[in-house]
Image (cartoon, rainbow, N blue to C red; front, side):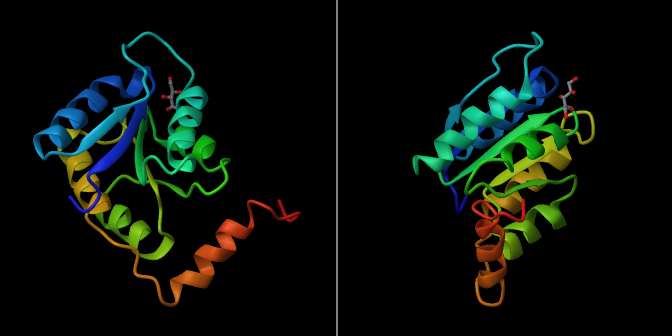
Length: 152
Ligand code: RB5
């Protein structure tokens, strides 16, 4: 993988798929930090998204993966964090494109939406794709400027 150090998190709905994705990545030598949750006991996805984003904002991890029932709640929460560009995806084309065009640093997906096979193709696409730069640089800069903007 291009990115071989990843922070990963889930809520109760994403727990089983997160465990499978962890095994998939560990087999490929990816270093993982798991910020929870650690069982199928009900928990609050905003707490997990916040813990994951803190590990990216600190510079400790370049990218992360968040899994909940739909991926939507996790992506909403992650995108409230300065410097985080989270993409909720359900197929590999978008997972690759969001790295190329948006320089996304968090991939979100839903365990109630995609199965293990599709999730693996998205993870591969996301973690193996560089940002294309060039014409996308000012656009991503404009996304980042929204962190400080009064347009919010
Ligand atoms: C949990 O039931 C569910 O709401 C959560 O996993 C997620 O889908 C929220 O967006």
